[in-house]
Amino acid sequence: MGPLLPNELIAIEWNYVIAILIGIAFGYIMEASGFSSSRKLVGVFYGYDFAVLKVFFTAAVVSVIGLYYMDYLNWVDITQLFVQPTYLSAAIIGGMIMGVGFLTGGFCPGTSLCAVAIGKIDGMLFTVGLMIGIFVFSELFAVFEPMFERSNLGHITMVDTLGISPYWIIFGFTIIAVVVFALSDIIREKVKKVFY
Amino acid sequence: MKEEKRKNRHIYWNPYFGGFLLGLLIIMTFYITGRGLGASGALKSGVVAIVHTVAPAHAESNLYYSKFIQEGESPLNNWLVFEAIGVLIGAFLSGTFTGRIKFSVQHSPKITSRRRLVFALTGGVLFGLGAQIARGCTSGAALSGMAVLATGGFITMLAIFGTGYVVAYFFRKNWI
Image (tube, chains in turn red, brown):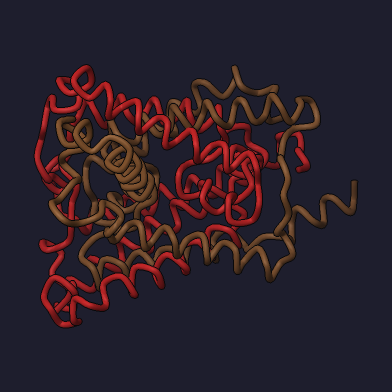
């Protein structure tokens, strides 16, 4: 039963080979979906292009349905999959800073790597910026630490937070995604087209 | 204008198709490795490696860098670094097949390349800082987190996109 590497169903030596192959697929899908273009990415915030929203939420819905279905079939043990710890204030503050960074720079870390790969100079500067930001955080870690460590809720999932069956959460999430997709098409019809 | 429109529509994959494939990739990644995808983690390893090379004593005494330094092993010897190398290769392949490889600065006709580059660098700094605070970026925290229903993933996703909509008005000149 999966996950394969942690349960030693695949030899650990394959770890980095798999990492590169998964990375290639990830980069290919992002670039082919247009994520190497900052003006396509930020379109979601101005209503002229909802590709980010559609790709992102389709991927989230497909993956959560797939993983829980594989758990149901006993192909994978969902409890062995990594759930990041929820640090409430850090997640909110960090997310807000990333939101401003997204609108300022037009990329996020994964998409800027795609932009670098096809020669976008703005993507290269964004990536340099990322490293400067990480450097600043690390050097000033003592300043950020209290906020970084505050309100640790542990490795919780929405099942713990909402206290209902994961299947209802996934069902609700899927409905929300479909409604949002439909709304985004209506909005896009009404917004002035932007060509890039 | 008509030509432009045609380009806009057909140049990239249908977003639902791309999203479906990305979803399958996330399932496969969790099935094989037990973890999700990531992007900012590789850059963090890069920064740790640089600082550790330039100023080893400083890196080892710093509370944050030292979390990622192990005796006798490079910080670059890390799953996410190899994944990020793959991302560069994959994006390069896709760009090659579609003829999109070109040195260029993409910006709205209303602003100069110089302004675009200054904003790109600034945005990168902010995003890098935010991703460290939130312990992950759009791929590592939000997307991979949502795939396993992690509460933190949903919170980070809402914070990124919610803030994006709030501040979008102030940045409109750069984009539309």
